[in-house]
Image 1 (tube, rainbow, N blue to C red):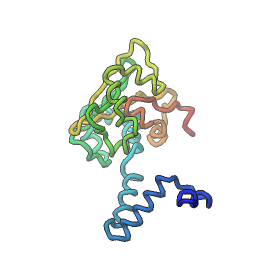
Image 2 (cartoon, rainbow, N blue to C red):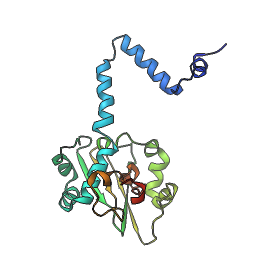
Image 3 (tube, rainbow, N blue to C red):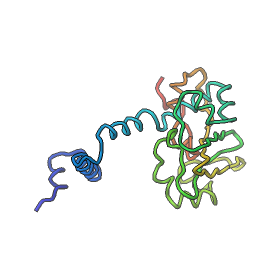
Image 4 (cartoon, helix red, strand yellow):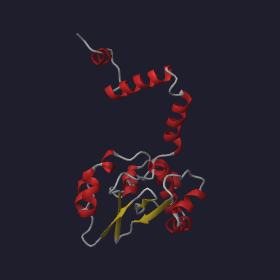
Length: 209
């Protein structure tokens, strides 16, 4: 006898089993009056447009393009971002740490998964995993190698342990050959992982003119 899962896929549903389950649960909760559809729409719209790594990318791009903002960001990231009018409410204190030719920064949370959601969106699964949290503080270079990041032997690696009160964002180094670029174009270079320290920004040739 065919079950519901088989029935849906035989007729070409593009939704995964998990998506179908979530949709079914949403329908039941809405029909029983436990969930307001408008509230769900508002949550989705918030995650799509008001928070997420595209916000962090805007901050990094502005820091690359505007020396005064870069200095303000490194002095007090919470205050600098608030002055841009960007949402920044998660955590009481945000610190920006800058990558340089001599130092590479990396963010971890050893106790839970403290993360600047409003700047970087939902944390990736690996960020919350025990292996990442345990190994990063002990052997950061090996963890970086797992992400495909190889650093010069003489480059210092600093690991920052975030908490519920203090969170961090990495200001990666600006890629070469991007002089004169607009902030919007620069933002397209910034990846989520580069703002955690487990990756680099894209190279200039990877972004369309």
